[in-house]
Each structure stands twice: as structure tokens, then as C-alpha cells.
Length: 98
Image (tube, rainbow, N blue to C red; front, side):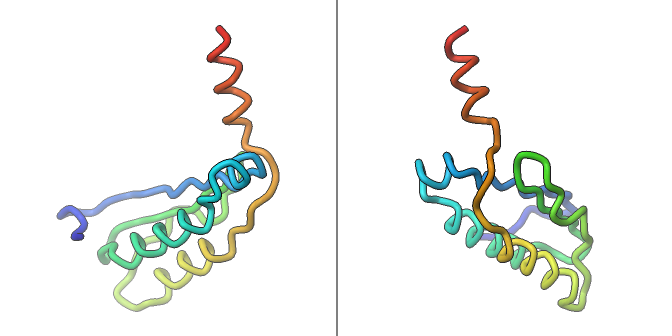
């Protein structure tokens, strides 16, 4: 898979809530997919990491020719741990009742 030409800005948003992790069990798979995506990003692309509900783990970081910024993003992704609440599930249930 190749990334599209040109520069991209990408915010990776992770739902590590207890509900999501227990219902879908996809937290680690999502982290692994995100790491693979970051490894494929080009020099000049920018990426950041957010964990719901509102934790900015890493602001937009430009991928540079050396490996330091890419490694910082990958380290941030691998360091994510499940827990807490996202509020997404509760909001979806509330909206579906209306």
C-alpha cells in the first residue's frame, strides 16, 4: 500500500475505553495498524495521537528524514493503554433512542 502523493496531516484517534476494549477487543490491533500507517508516511507528512475522551498524547509532529520524529510517534502509539470512558457509546445509545 502506498500513501497518496503530497503532504498529509493525520490525527490518529484511539478509543481505549473499557466498553470498547471489552466489546470489540480491537485496541491492540488498532495500535498495530496505526504503527504500520506511520511507518508508511512520507517525509513532510504530519501526524498526531489522541486518546479519547480528550487526551492529546502527541500533537501534530512532522515526519522528518531522520527517524527521530517517526520513532516518537510510534513510541506514543505503543505506549497507549486501555482504560477510562469515551462517552461515544453512551452518546450513540442516547441518540438511537431519539
